[in-house]
Amino acid sequence: MSFHKASNHSFQNAALRTISIETEAISALTSRIDETFDAVCELILKTSGRVVVTGLGKSGHIASKIASTLASTGTPAFFVHPAEALHGDMGMITKSDCVIAISNSGVTKEILDMLPIIKRLGCPLISLTGNNCSTLAQNSDMHLDAGVDNEACPLSLAPTSSTTVALVLGDALAIALLEAKNFTEEDFAMSHPGGLLGKRLILKVADIMHTGDEIPVVQSGTSLAEGLMEITQKGLGMTTVVDSSNVLLGVFTDGDLRRALTNSPDFQTVLIDSVMSENGISVSKSMLAAEATLIMKENKISSLVVTDSNKKVGGVLHLMELLRSGLA
Image (cartoon, rainbow, N blue to C red; front, side, top):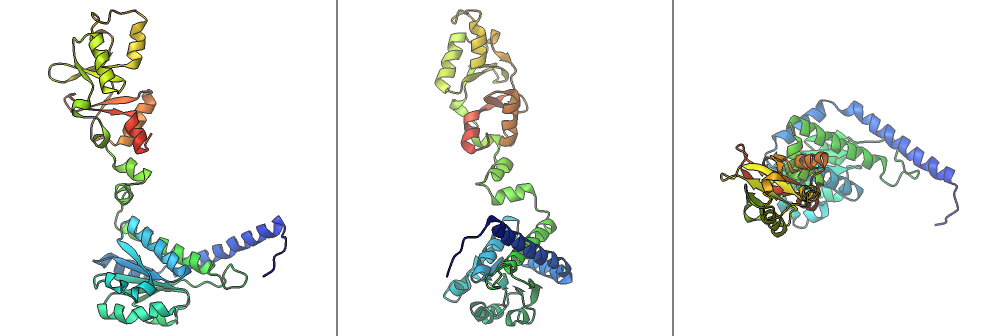
């Protein structure tokens, strides 16, 4: 193999040519989205088990991604490597599943060797190939044409356009099924609880607020000195002020203290009621933590009191918890 120095212009030409060829290949798919595509979607929707996606080599990588996309958009799915399937992993496939097999040639030996077992199980088989007359296509219950006129590779050897088309066709299936199931943002978040989107759509104030003895709270009529002691002990930079029924009357924060200090108060005699911020901003424990984050940002505060419908204090949400959760 020899190398020669190429100009940036030739690099750009190669890139533009690749993009053009693959764009044309994707555009050609539009004429193939027909009744067969509908039937495949209906078959998958009727599947009581899971969608098993398989493929070898580059097609295997595409199959794995398609399985992941299906699973994250409401269609339970997983990837099975065909070689591993022939050495024990066929046991992962049950008669209630359906199988999507991806092979550009349609004659991948490892996939063809799976066919007798798939047939014996009675699993519906959907193939996605570039050859309608191939062995795999002809032995499938349904076939999706993923053929391309040209690979982007100038040698027509490296799977490029063909894998791109297979991936797009898999995405088309996933999104069509998503819409048919009325899949929502909340459903998506349930599949992505560890991601930022999942946290924004799932995490509630109740999940991360301080409760019980962690809540800084003093009774109305408490001295400023006692209020400062409560703030220091609880470490949230504020304290709630409540009546005898635990109803929120106000909050006292570090900011309120700075303002109070301008009048040189007697900490033992001045009551916290006279220097607190009355009522204060409160939220419910059922509010999304992401919404609480916006309230903090808009009001330039670092904590929120959590109250029930009767304004009774049930917790305190602090900025630090939002930072730890990745929402702030």
